[in-house]
Image: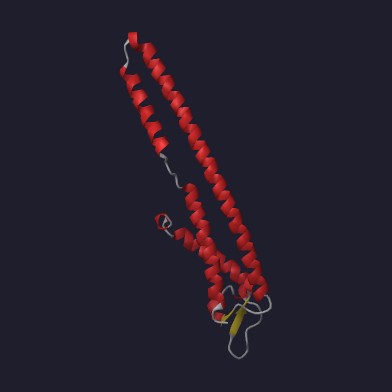
Amino acid sequence: MVLRPFITLFLVTAFQLVSRYLEILLKKESVSEEQVKLRQEIKQLLKEASSLTTPSTFAQAAMLKRKAAAKEKELNKIQEEKEKAKKSFHDQYSESLKIAKVLVYCMLLWSFWSTPIASVPQHLLQPFAKLITWRRPDATTGHVAVGIIPWLVLTSRVSKFLCKMLPEDLFV
């Protein structure tokens, strides 16, 4: 009985940590060697084109600018493909995470539906005691029983808040 709330908190926090990790992976931008090479080529072509400023070298400068524009299009295409692959990866794993979360939450609900998840003194829950409690306070101890649904809501909000406070470089 004593470990029930902590096990539930651990499971909910684990889901929140994995969710946060996937969120950070989606934000993280990785640059491939090919993209770096293309950017260097574009800079070099534009540098060469800007150095050709005389009227006799105008055609050559225009050709270099067109090559740079074509390389930029190629770079944009590579970046779009990479973004699409990253989004697909994120969608796949976040969908799997949602399914696992629903299954675990249903299992917890089924396990603790008829029994309280915790019994705590009533003064610790003030002013939210009526929202969180399962029944009336026990006359002998003065403790109130906390149900699984309010506990899941509470732990998910707290763990989400704590995971947002963690620095992003901790996950990388």
